[in-house]
Image 1 (cartoon, one colour):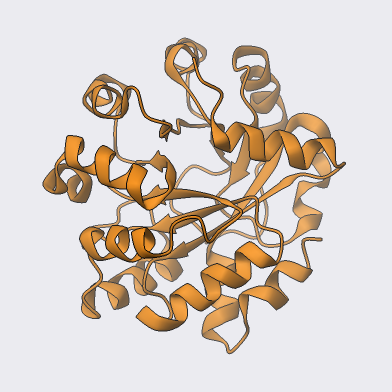
Image 2 (spheres, helix red, strand yellow; image 1 turned 180 degrees about the vertical axis):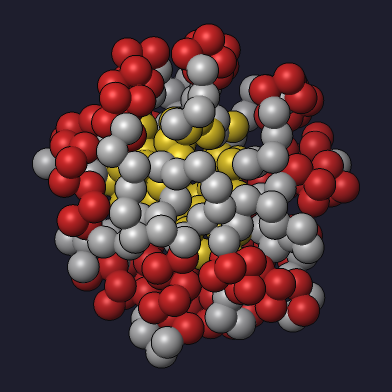
Length: 255
């Protein structure tokens, strides 16, 4: 198995004595042109991996902040085709690893084999598909086989040990540990039982573990210490930009 670019990015961050930073931003937010300005700012400000959200009309796992931003992007005409086309024009411009995060329907409608081919040309290194169950994931694995694209597994507080072991057989890139049960970005406190579940995940997976959903500031990570290798933040970044801030100033708080 080829070592993922995403794994390398996280290992490099850890070797430098810090947790890897993985911001999430919906494609086309706050508008089509400024999105790429903010993407470049995230990259220049120390993002190790950047999750690019693929807007969808029925975002079942998204909280109100991400959902609102995604629907606005749809109204601006943002599509998966547009995202891949624009990233292809900018290939090799970014130091960070790029990941598309979206629901299965847009990927399926695009065509999984076509997606794999075009994503490689666009410099995309991973896919995160929150509504894709393990039992259906073989279609995506088949399409990306032989590429450098990783399908990132999502696990959480309610993921049974047996299911974690199933994911571990195929997982590449990193493991996305969902910190809460529910939608993104609506809580200020993280459940205390995360620590023990992270211990279990570390015993099962050989990949780096990233903690996401509901992460607003670095202080929230203190209870988890070396259990996590990376942190994902999205809603708080979107709020910061919507309120007039810029990605670079948001990243400063994480350094």
